[in-house]
Image 1 (spheres, rainbow, N blue to C red):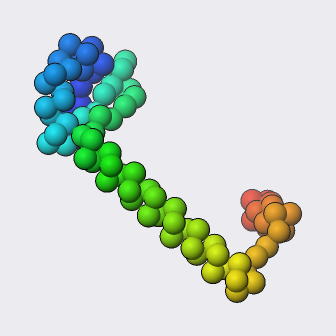
Image 2 (spheres, rainbow, N blue to C red):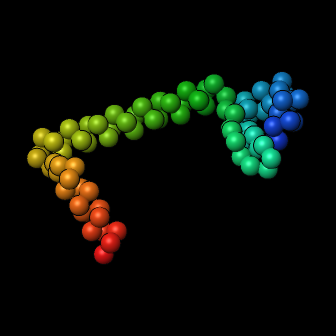
Length: 86
């Protein structure tokens, strides 16, 4: 992934828009990554993937509920505490 510092990204905004059509462009400020610019098409694909994963997780949860595979929150917290402490 190509990277630009924030000043260069600002100064070369038009050129950056052309670059993101080929692939993501990382933006750094003070040497630290702060953003990634992607094309509209890639953004739509990422959003569709997130939606698909969320739907799958919800469907899995429904199946677990129907199968009686449920645990109350207190039990989960207690198990986590035991795992951390022991």
